[in-house]
Length: 135
Length: 169
Image (cartoon, rainbow over all chains, first blue to last red; front, side, top):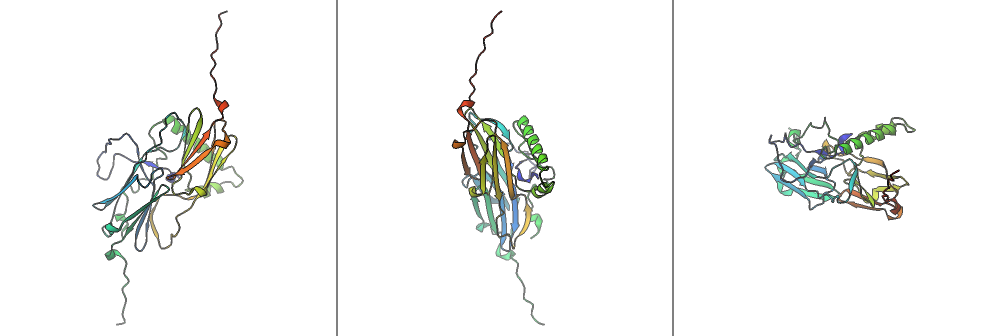
């Protein structure tokens, strides 16, 4: 049930075990992500409502794929909040990627607040069927 | 490929879900949570008891924020991955209904899913509107997966403050 709402990123308990401090006074959310595998690669789909294609950064560094997005909130000036279910903030999430991914061919698309990343498998990692000959 | 290579850092953390941002206005969050609980509870009293609940379990339901100033009410909803054609907005005298269906990205054949957090399905949200609205001037914009509805208040809504003199007897 709670899957549809954003989850606040935990600042403690990061992978490195370091407590992060930030320079900006914004909140960071962990986006919801689907991961699918096809014969040729992996597909990652992330919900980043409020982020456009220019706000998103996808980086691959030392087998860690990170997704970061800056969301500029529409200023609330003059408005007062009367009902609130979600907060506006940045997004961040990181995944460890198997080295069998061809890092040079990763493609990312952004549409309607949804980021879609295609990570093609390296040739060596693709399944090969081995023909069996009659002995 | 072994699953562990792709395991997100936060794997297995979801058993204690945080429903919405816990920063900021605790009283608004509490009120929102209570409203949702009531909504969810009374939804079960429809013609088909439980069936709706069962169907909607784990299904997509957008989160909504409402802000207000003297002249208008602004409703924003997070609808990532939706198309504006699939969203229907209806306004009655005192409520705003957002309806739609979030479809799965097609061609799921030949794909094995590792990890699913995003949800899909049809939804209806009915939001009470706490003021009289000019229905001819309501505007809705869908951008970057966020729906933004501006509902201008009727002018008479502006209450003139009147100071009452106290006479000495």
